[in-house]
Image 1 (tube, rainbow, N blue to C red):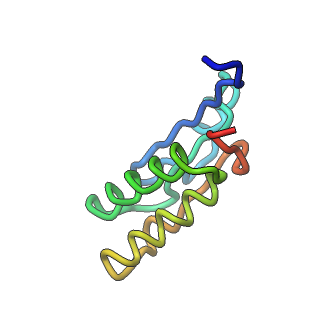
Image 2: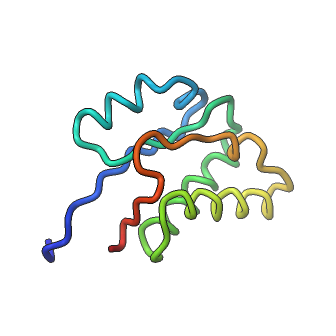
Length: 101
């Protein structure tokens, strides 16, 4: 590594993966900086598109993970005409984490 602190994010892109905080807190308590998931059901294709846009934005641009999630939801909205399921998400831990700094 180049001397930067390693940042750890767990993205659980599955239905109900953040409905309750227990699972997210388990990751936080074991060294992760943030846990991110959906609070309700999500459709497969929009969820896959969301995941791709989220990972790209969070990894390759200088934005926080919460900004990357908003960007990803906008991409889903543009491509599918709706983003209500993927927009119903939650961060547990540090939602202002930036992976590039």
